[in-house]
Every structure is written in C-alpha cells, then in structure tokens.
Amino acid sequence: MADHLAPAGAPHAAGEHAADGTTKRDFLILAAGGFAAVGAGAMAWPFISSMNPARDVLALSTTEAEIGAIPVGGAVTLMWRGKPVFVRHRSPDEVQAAATVDMGELRDPQADSARVKAGKAEWLVVIGVCTHLGCVPLGQKPTDPKGEFGGWFCPCHGSHYDTSGRIRKGPAPANLPVPTYAFTTDTQIKIG
Amino acid sequence: MSIGLHNSTFKNPVIRWVDSRLPIFSMMQNEYGTFPTPKNFNYFWNFGALAMINLLIMIATGIFLAMHYTPHVSMAFDSVERIMRDVNYGWLFRYVHANGASMFFIVVYVHIWRGMWYGSYKAPRELLWIIGVVIFLLMMATAFMGYVLPWGQMSFWGATVITNLFSAFPVVGDHIVTLLWGGFSVDNPTLNRFFSLHFLLPFVIFGVVFLHVAALHITGSNNPLGIDVKSPADTLPFHPYYTAKDSVGMVVYFIVFASLVFFAPNYLGHADNYIPANPMVTPAHIVPEWYFLPYYAILRAVPDKLGGVLLMFGSILVWFILPWLDTSPVRSMRFRPIAKWFLLLWGIAFGVLMYCGGKPPEGIYVVLSRVATLYYFAWFLVILPLLGRLERPLPLPESIAKPVLRGGGPLPAGAAAKPMEKA
Ligand code: HEM
Ligand code: FES
Image 1 (cartoon, protein in one colour):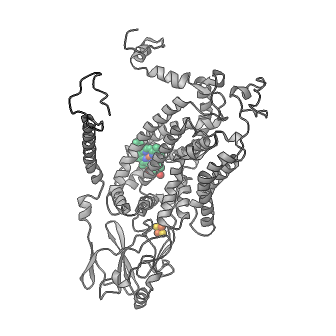
Image 2 (cartoon, rainbow over the protein chains, first blue to last red):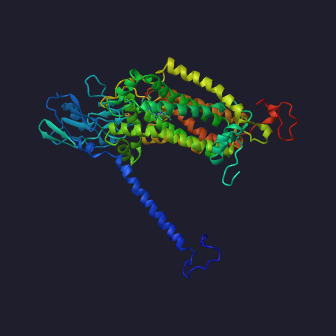
C-alpha cells in the first residue's frame, strides 16, 4: 500500500516499504487502533460492572427460618434475595411419588434424593420462581391448584411441577432450583 | 456579503444577522417551507408529523411527572398516587402520558402500515426505513420501562417476564438477566435504572428521528402512486399545502386523544396495575400493554422457551430486511393486484395475534396464534420474495401530475394500456 499522505515526490527513507508493500504507517494505524479499542473496552467495563449486583445486595443474601411448626402436607413461603422460597413438609406418599419416577419421563432428569438433604427427605426447599419466565407458581396454599403432578402449577403459561419441584409439563425448561441451604438445627434452616 | 458568511435571503435584519452566521432559518425554510413535496399525498401521510408531536407531548408531560415521581420500591406507587390526587393537574399529566403512549403506538403502527402498503421501504428509502425500525425498537424499550415505574402488580410482573426472556439464551442468558436486574430479582436497583433509562431514551429517540427526517429530505417523500417525482409539476411546496393538511389530521388526532384522556383514561390500562407490586404473588392473568400483545402471542405460540423468544424478537427484526425481501420493483400496492390481498391478510394476522395475546394461552387461542404466526413469517420470507417474480403489476401512470390533471394528453405508446384511476 502506498503512503498517500507523504508529499508527492518526497524521497522515501530506505527500508520504509516492506517487500509486500505495507508501510510503517499501516503498522502505526493498526497499533493505535488496537490500543484505542482496548482503552474503550477498559473504560466501558466500570459502567457495565456497576449494573451488576452491588455489595450490599450481595451481603443481604442469607435468610434463616424456623420450620418445625409446618404440619405434614403444609408449606410456607420464605423470602430470599427478593424471591419466594417454597418449603414444603412432604407426606410419605409425596416423597414416595417423587422418588419412584422413571428418569426417562423427566425433561430435566434429577433424582429426588439429589434435591433434598440426606435423612430429611420430608423437607423440600426450592426457589419458587417458574423457570419459564419467572412467575410464582401456585400450590403453596391448601386451596391452590397443584397441577397434574401434585406439586405446583404456574398460571402464567401453564407449567406443571411435581412433588419434587421438577418440571413435568408446559413450557418451562428446567426444575425449580434448589437453593444452597443447610439445617442449622433439626428444625431450622439457613438459606444462602 | 463578507467572506465566510452564509448568503441569507431573509429581509428582517435580526433574522438575517443570525441566518448569515448560522443558517437555521434558511434550513427551516428549505426543509419545511418550500420543500417540494409530491402533490398527491393522502391522509396516511399525516402520521409522521403526528408521531413527532406525540414525542414532544411525551417529553413535556414526562419531565413534569419526573418532578414528582420517586423511583424507590417503597415509594414509587404512592408517589404516583400522590401525583393523581394531590399534585395540581398531576392527574392530567399522568393520564396524558399514559394514554399518550397508546396514541404513540397507534400513530406509529399506522405510519408503518403506510410504509408497507405504499412500498416506502424500497430503494432509495431503505435506510430511512431501517432508521424507522430502530425508532420503533427504542419506543418499545421506552414504553416497557415506563410501564414499570408506577410499580403496580402489572409493572412488576411485566418486568419480571420480559427481563426473563433473556434467560432463554444459552450460557450468557442468566448473566444478562442479573445485569439487567442489578440483583437476584426485579427490585429497587431495577426500578432505579429503568427510571434513568426511561428518562434518557426519549431524547435518544429524538436524535434518531432527526436522522430519519434528514434521510427523508435526501430521498424525498414517497407518495400513494409509488412512482418517482419527475418534474416540478408533480410537487407542491410543503407550506402551506401540507402544513394545512397535517393540521386537519392533528385536529382529529387531538379529538381521539382527548376522548381517551377525559372519558376513558383507564380503558387501555389494566386494573391490576392499581395494586401495589407484590413479589410473592403473581396475578392470575398477566398481559402486557395492548401494543405488545402481537409479539406476546408469538412468544406463547411456540411450545419451546428459546424458540418462542427467538421468533418474538425475529418478528420485528425481519422488518430490517424487508427492503430486500420484497423483490418487486413496483412500490404502491395500488398496482400490485395479488400482493395487496396477501398484505391485507398479513394485517389481519397481526390483528388476530393482538387479540390472542390478550387471551389465556389455551385451546382455540393457541391454535389461532400458531396459524397467524406462521402466516406472519410466511408473508415476509416466502410470499413476498416469490410474488416479485410471479405477479404481473398493473401499468404505472407516467407521472404524478398526469392522472391528477385529467385529460393530460395521451400516454406514450406502450407506457400504459389501461386508463389510470384517479389518484
Ligand atoms: C417515547 C416517549 C415516552 C413513552 C412511550 C413513555 C411511556 C410511559 C408509560 C407507558 C408510562 C406508564 C404510565 C402509567 O401507566 O402510569 C410512563 C411513565 C412515566 N414516564 Fe414516560 N414515556 C415517554 C417519555 C418520558 C419522558 C421523556 C420522561 C421524563 C423526562 C418520562 C417520565 C415518566 C415518569 C416519571 C413516569 C412515571 C409516572 C407514571 O406512571 O405516570 N417519560 N411512561
Ligand atoms: S412463567 Fe411459568 S409458565 Fe411461563
């Protein structure tokens, strides 16, 4: 490539042109352009990063609750990180139903035992946010519809979850997620 | 005339002094005064000017609402109620702003439809059309974020469902959603940034509208015949002819607008948005504002999450390539005897989608949505590209002036076999 900006007829310094016709100026343009791009990216980063959760939001991310008073078959809804968390005290029948499902039938295959704490199979703790587009499924109150699989039913676009909170029917792609939690005593849990 | 000054034709010494140094008066005169405009516009050509007025109304009422509005989850709802009850004329600003959003979409939908019917997207106006689609996308974002601000149940759950659309994308989806929320759910950080962006975007729209008009003034306007302007006999100066015609449309527009604001201010809204947002309870039936219903119906017509989201975004993105999908050189549907019926059917499909989007996603509504979605895309991707080759258009008039001035002399041999309809 010719060096267009050089004055016409100006003598070129020896060695300015490489064999393939590129010039020092091409290199300078590339290097300056590359540098400017990195600089622009570095400047954009704080702006984008500032939109992610702030430290106080992250700090408020544990919730503790006493669950001993929930009767068998009953449920409570806790609030964790601004989202509902479903705690259900499952009956032996419900545990049985959840544990004996054929994995081949599941859209998001996961054994019930992988979704509860060992020895605490009667307690199911899941985030109560439909994995389709984020509505809160029904099924916590005794009068709510629980869907075709006895768990939860999302009224927004018709997703059915089973007694392990797994997606069985409807547009949602995944099971209700199990949050990180631990039993701090026999009847107390800490989420987050 | 000294060197370096613009040669102004204005007589008034003050105007002349400014105009010689900054020719904004000359520019207004050229672009809106003497601007040569096709003489055969019908009332569909009012809607661009109406959209401009509507944007100004939104900005004016919005700025005054923002003086009283509080973008915080614990105060937003109450601050809007205070605007309604206590702020002098607050009810007026809010109802004008809320119904103004609906008017804006009515006007812009007609404006877009006009472009489709008369082929205004075709060469040389492709970029003008593309800029228009950009404006429409910005409007959608603005209206969506504005609707979140009153922090009612529909605000909250609309925001939840729409932001969650992005979670459908593999790998990056969840990160995008967290970034949009600034937390782990729609919450105070979300409300704050939506307010900031809702304030900003209308001014961005204003800038893009300027580009839209600048591009228009390079190519000139299309017209109902879809043929090029050939001579000065085909045009009229914009003022007073089209300033007058636009004013007639404006009166009708304001009658409709005022009827909504004063007699049915909540007709187009949803009652659930007068219930404060509750993150623990989803309303039984969530629907977006009416102007988003067609896309919502497309989303729900697809039984797969990612598929639904892609088709929904695709339903508008496909407009970008419309100038290249339509292979016919004839612009106006007046001269396309087959395409016009298919386009009308497309308009009906759009209406069906709007209707189904407001209904629960079950039974007949799902079937209807699917059929209409299929046709929506078939029109763009199959019918339109094929028709350009298969259809035989009617003969085009020789010029705009000819069919207007009747008995304008015989047409040159071979130019047209049929007498022209009156424009
Ligand atoms: C493209 C132009 C605009 C559109 C389409 C638009 C749309 C909307 C919508 C749909 C609402 C919800 C109304 C309701 O249901 O209460 C809203 C609210 C609001 N908008 Fe806008 N807006 C626009 C421009 C602006 C501007 C320029 C500002 C400020 C400078 C603004 C400030 C507000 C405020 C403070 C609210 C909350 C009060 C309320 O809910 O009425 N808007 N907007
Ligand atoms: S959000 Fe639950 S089914 Fe769509």
